[in-house]
Figure: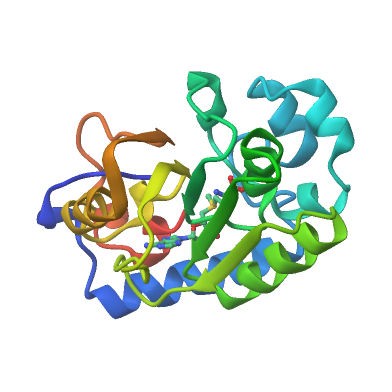
Length: 206
Ligand SMILES: C[S@@+](CC[C@H](N)C(=O)[O-])C[C@H]1O[C@@H](n2cnc3c(N)ncnc32)[C@H](O)[C@@H]1O
């Protein structure tokens, strides 16, 4: 995966990037196996240090499509009763983890660019018995919440996919409460990309 604030890496257009992301993650919603150069699914969650008891409590279906690149909960800043937003929730495993941390008085919200992931997250969270959740599809980095302020925003392997990281961070800060927390795991580009990758919408979505 790639990440850069520089527009020189932008492929032909934002629509191309969104289409490439949706196409890739529609496939990942069926199965993440073999589609990444890092461990995904249950093995990935174990390698990233998620609580073993939480991994074992999660229905297997979460792991078919989970492809996070870090563990946003390792920062340990999620309190019971919190309202939490997952920016790019994928199939919902992090919302499941968060739901256990915020408890019955808390609420967890997810947004994702890919309809198939949104459907999968709703199915998975319902199957897991999470009741205090909401998952919405988005069409851009604009977060579709005006009336809710979040105690915590988490994100796992998503901001690197955003065509305009400035907008993504502005949006996250707009919906956070004063003194709210952002806990995210992401990918950073060091050095230059080869020219054939730099202009490729498909490479952007890896
Ligand atoms: C690498 S996957 C990570 C999914 C999930 N966070 C996890 O840990 O399994 C990236 C997800 O982000 C979504 N996505 C990419 N760009 C997005 C954006 N700008 N806003 C919301 N979701 C986005 C994709 O559709 C995909 O489901």
